[in-house]
Image 1 (cartoon, rainbow, N blue to C red):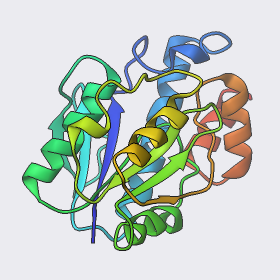
Image 2 (cartoon, helix red, strand yellow):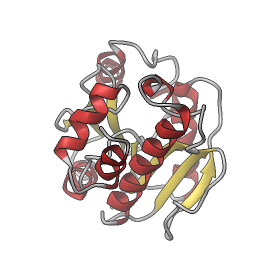
Image 3 (cartoon, rainbow, N blue to C red):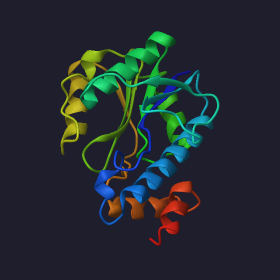
Image 4 (tube, one colour):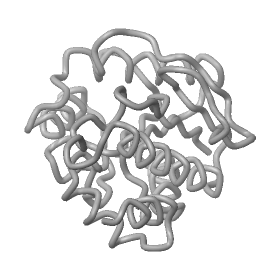
Amino acid sequence: MAQIIIIAKEPVAGRVKTRLTPPYNPDQAAALAEAALRDSLLTVSATPASQRILALDGLPGSWLLPGFVVIPQRGTGLDERLAAAFSDAYRLRPEAVVLIGMDTPQVTPALLGEAVEGLERHDAVFGPAADGGFWLLGLREPDPSLLLGVPMSHPETGKLQLDRLDRAGLTVHLLPELTDVDTAADAVAVAEQVPSSRFAATLRGLGR
């Protein structure tokens, strides 16, 4: 059994989903971010895991569900924050770790369950994102060197991260590609995939 981390920002206007503005204003972008985070928390809650962790930049709010251990993010660049989240979770409980972000409200318990099970047979699990990044990374034995220095928010981030895992000699289980919600077009496309989600309902409430 693995533990699952969501790495997220507190959904505060002006600090999250800035690429959605325009067409949305900062409050609307924050509302979409909170909805995506709520959907992600629900999905993780519905997935069997040894521990559920929220690695948070900011403060928890009313959107937080019971059963999550909240830890602060550490580091400056995203590679440092990801490496620290893995290390901190592994220190709390020395078991395999699956990490996702808050940008894929369409993720399902089945997909996360596949990631957890994948770490029983592989050293790593990797979920590529349509924008060239990745939406999930799972490690049986987290090591900061697997992440530190990998360029993030780059068109080839996913390829470079996967290359890093391959060069370390790790066996990798690949998951299906998902779309991160970064742009307004992404938001519409993802909402269409999960029309009953909080994310889709929030988008409809904005008249989109």
